[in-house]
Image 1: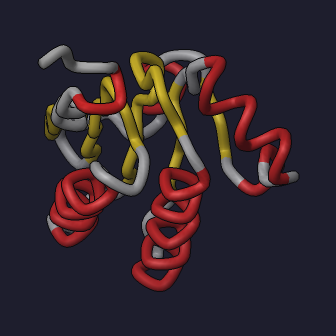
Image 2: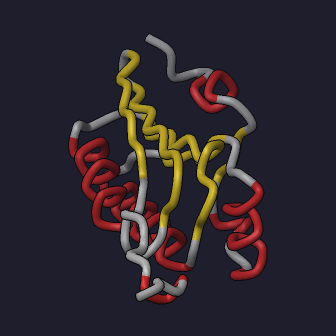
Image 3: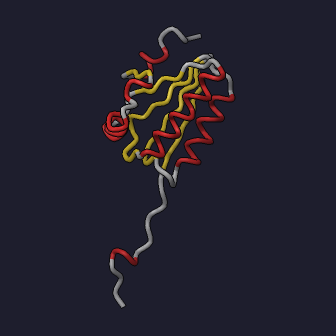
Length: 126
């Protein structure tokens, strides 16, 4: 019996996260794939970071390789929650995949975007 590509198991979705607190600023770095299969992981990390009560929440998206509408919905929900808590949200260096979805969805102007973490956190340093 030979296996066709449709018969082979799909690899597990991969989203790596890292959260760092620098003074009053929390930076969440996401890398890999952000889609329906990884949205819960990303949501948990981002919500925990927001619950930590930062003066600024920066989400580094430079290493996100696959980004779907589920990832966009996660960021929009996070933005609403951040506004409700009075916490500024900044997206840092969105990858080409992220920018493409933001542009297609007409959401590019919805978020504050900075090129680097240093630029995003300027003025929020301890």
